Every structure is written in C-alpha cells, then in structure tokens.
Image (tube, rainbow, N blue to C red):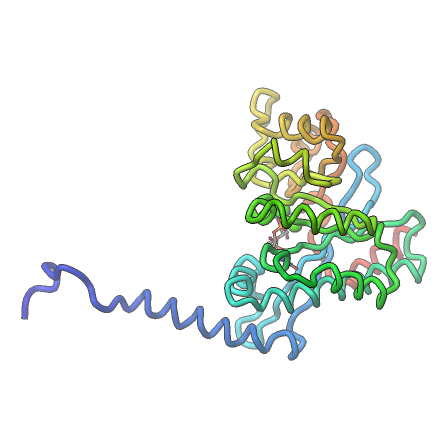
Length: 279
Ligand code: C2E
Ligand code: CA
Ligand code: CA
Ligand code: CA
C-alpha cells in the first residue's frame, strides 16, 4: 500500500463522519423534544436604562435533552431551521410566552404593562399562514397584541424584503410591536431600513461588549443609536455585562438594556418569585 501521506484525497474522514452522526442524532431527538415536553421557555428581563424599571422580557427557548442535559439554542435552532422543525417550535414558544405574560398580568404581578419579545426565524416568516397563526394565539391567550413584540433579524427580512414588508404591515395593523434583532451583524441596508415598519433596534451584543473602557472606543454603538433615534425607533442594547458598558449606554441615551449585568434568562417560576419580591 502507498504511504497514507501521499494519498491525493481522503475518502473517509472519521471525525467528519462522527460530526454528521451526532448532528443526525440530535435532529432525531429534536423531533421528539416538543411532544416529550423537553422544551421550556426562559425569560430575560429588559430594563429602561434611565429608571432601571422592568419593561418586558425576551422569551428564549431551552432544550433539556434526556441524556445530554441542557442543549444551547445556538446549537439546536440552526438544526430546527434546516429541517423545518422551527415552524412547530416557534409556534409553541410564541404560544407559551403569550400565555405566560397573560398569566402574569392576570395575577397582577406588575403595575405597568410589560411586553413579551419573541424571536421569529426566517423560516417562520415564509409560512403563508403566519399572521393567522399569530391571530389565533392572541385569541386563545387573550393577550393584548400591544404587549407582544416580535424580533426578526435583518437577514431574515432581507431574504425577501417585499414579502416581509407586507407581513410586517399586517402585524403592525394589529398593533403588534416589531424589533430588528442582532442589528449591525447582517449586511444592513439603510435604504431599506426606513421602509420597514419597525419600532425597535436591538444592538447586537458583540458591539456592546466591544465598547472599551474609554470614550474613544465606543465602536459602532453611538452610530447605531443615532440611526435608530433619527428613524424614530427605540434601542435595546443586548448583552450588557458591566457597569462601564451600562454607563456608556446611558450617556449615549440608549433606551433599554438586557444582559447578565441585570439578570440572566430565568424560568417562569423564578421570574414570578422575582416579581413577587419587588411588589
Ligand atoms: P438572541 O435572540 O440574540 O438572544 C440573546 C442571546 O444572548 C441569548 O442566548 C441570551 O441568553 C444571551 N445573553 C443575554 N444576556 C447576555 C449577556 O449579558 N452576555 C452574553 N454573553 N449573552 C447574553 P441564547 O438564549 O443562548 O439564545 C441564542 C440564540 O438562539 C438567540 O439569540 C436566538 O437567535 C436563538 N433563539 C433562542 N430562542 C429562540 C426562539 O424561541 N426562536 C428562535 N427562532 N430563535 C431563538
Ligand atoms: Ca432575540
Ligand atoms: Ca439578539
Ligand atoms: Ca444573537
């Protein structure tokens, strides 16, 4: 046999093979996760930066895998996207989180109304009955649409800008609020941005975390806040982890913040307890 080093190509890469098998196994498990009730929604508080008051939550899905333990959405959401499972998962997260907010409101857990922000994937956006699904969830949960906020990434919008705009307009008619998620990471098109009926820009956490210790190194954050305010949108800074970042954001008049510095995403019971202790 020839020395393996001189082989012109490798027919079988055992590590690649392993990865493919693991990925496939995860996909098989994910198909079962929903009806086996392995998915849960965690809620991360969003605060007004000037008053430190709670204004709402972001719903973030979690998967408790029976053998692997907690699997990150950064791992399974892309698989759910590729396989189309995201439409069922996304529908479930939306319903669950609307129910939860409505329950907290019914229990009078907070005085001022709070919003629930829910991530919508690109794939969900292409479902022809998306708006009907949302209408049905709002009807079932009795949640006032004004308290629902949907988060969509720029790339999801840009994938089919015209079709998306008409869906966004439909949602707007119902007074559902809209946010652009991970702003700055996609290829932003400012000329498009102003034509989308969007209420809020969420600055991606990578920009927030790059904000340096001195005012010369604020990176793109001041620009993004400026753009949002010129367009009449509010701004949420994600991934706020330090007092320094918070100070910079306040000085820049950023409206809202979310991050480990305030609170990590928590299960519903922990949020209920937190709300009880504050009131
Ligand atoms: P995202 O929408 O940008 O969500 C924010 C992510 O940042 C969350 O990660 C959150 O836990 C994390 N985070 C919050 N504060 C901090 C902080 O101070 N520092 C750091 N380093 N991270 C922070 P998570 O929950 O792991 O979710 C990852 C991504 O998975 C989300 O990013 C979103 O794109 C996707 N995802 C999560 N839940 C859903 C869902 O229900 N539907 C869809 N379509 N996507 C979801
Ligand atoms: Ca988000
Ligand atoms: Ca984000
Ligand atoms: Ca993100």
